[in-house]
Image 1 (spheres, rainbow, N blue to C red):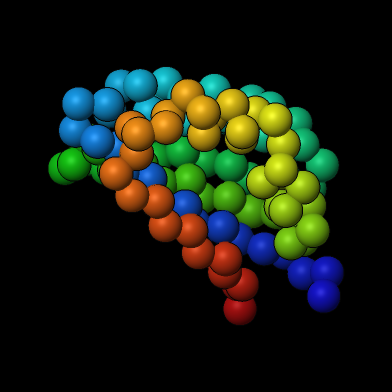
Image 2 (cartoon, rainbow, N blue to C red):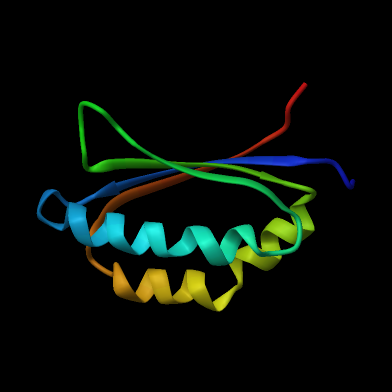
Length: 96
């Protein structure tokens, strides 16, 4: 199946690590937007709970998104934020 994929990723930082997580998430935007298949990659921060971040992403297909998930900048983010993220939820979604 070669249809567009929407990703909603929710990242909750540890309360004392909000700025670290935010800084590292912001570093992902430029290289990700340059990747093959990336249509949209928008980072949001919750207005009431600054520890909660959400990426809203659109990809040409799941294969190209999976290539993104294996990229070095994502691995660097994971290393930089080890222990700083309280929870992470990812939903793969299809638009009707």
